[in-house]
Length: 260
Ligand code: HXC
Image 1 (cartoon, rainbow, N blue to C red):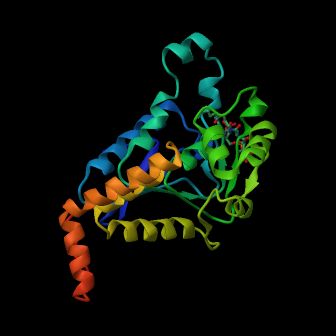
Image 2 (cartoon, rainbow, N blue to C red; image 1 turned 90 degrees about the vertical axis):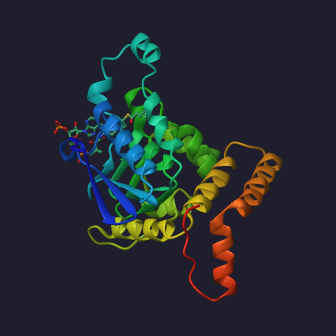
């Protein structure tokens, strides 16, 4: 497929890399860009040869937010009736893991987009923030909720109410990103692709189940979540991959998963 606002590639046979590509607008997330992103992600999610996806931007900007120029003249009636931003949630419905490789600005919707991914790796240049307050609005892509769950109330309030930008190091300390990787152009993308390749080498069924149960921790009570985890765990004994994985361990060889 030919896209206008994103690039797609296969850095590994099992990994799809999607690069946001509106460099002049610092990857501002316009509706056409988001439609392309959703289409590329859905295609990768359906493709049996793909085990995980990586989402990145440029060295300067992962994404500087929703497209302010597109939004500025909208009226309440338009945004409400047309469910503006509803298609942003599609990324959270993917069954396969998606890793955000963040360099430069991840602001507003850009920060929220990263938070919708399953793992965030940051370059030392990454800057996270929710500056919507400066535009007379608030986060609309889940930022307030995911930040509160991820970094806690006080930090989420500070980010949302002051618009202050948080450095990669701070984001790591706060648990927003799993780690800050080394300096150097492309380093964070290479590392994210390596993590994606590692995930893609596992049983796709077990990976999907793992993603599902961790996500449940954000929606369910502890008792419900523990029961859900146990049942999904039980269910995996019906898969060939469980038989193969455990047999391979006992036979001291590498498992050959068939995703069945
Ligand atoms: C539209 C944007 C944009 C955005 C940058 N640009 N961010 N266009 N929407 N969110 C455009 C600029 O207008 C400019 O275009 C070009 O990109 C380069 O940006 P500069 O400002 O010249 O670059 P710089 O001086 O380096 O400053 C970088 C920046 C600044 C600090 C990131 O661009 C900035 O503050 N951007 C807005 C950040 C923001 O408020 N994000 C939240 C958006 S609201 P021209 O044509 O002039 O060259 C939001 C709501 C989400 O995300 C709700 C639901 C998901």
